[in-house]
Image 1 (spheres, rainbow, N blue to C red):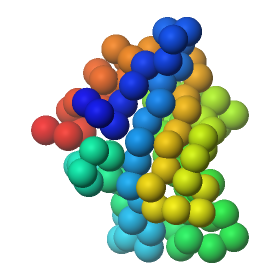
Image 2 (image 1 turned 90 degrees about the horizontal axis):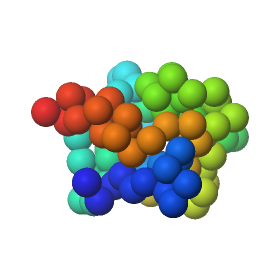
Image 3 (image 1 turned 90 degrees about the vertical axis):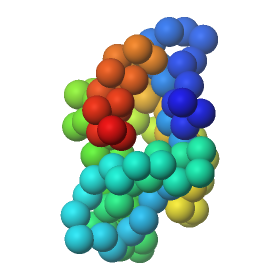
Length: 100
């Protein structure tokens, strides 16, 4: 899974996503190249899309919103997130059923 990487500390992951704003509902729809494709309902204005992305992954991985940061791509559809408090194995277990 090239979109998902474990960090050296073993307690955080890096996630590469491609965001499609103004969708009918917020959900993971598969892969977009080497990134996880996330459709969101929010428009890409005033940080609403980024807030929705953070909220979605915090809820999905059951971590606080403060544990999800956008490491790169704040103004782009292609983003890299860092999530603290979840291991690579836990993340794979949560994401795999959504991609099948």
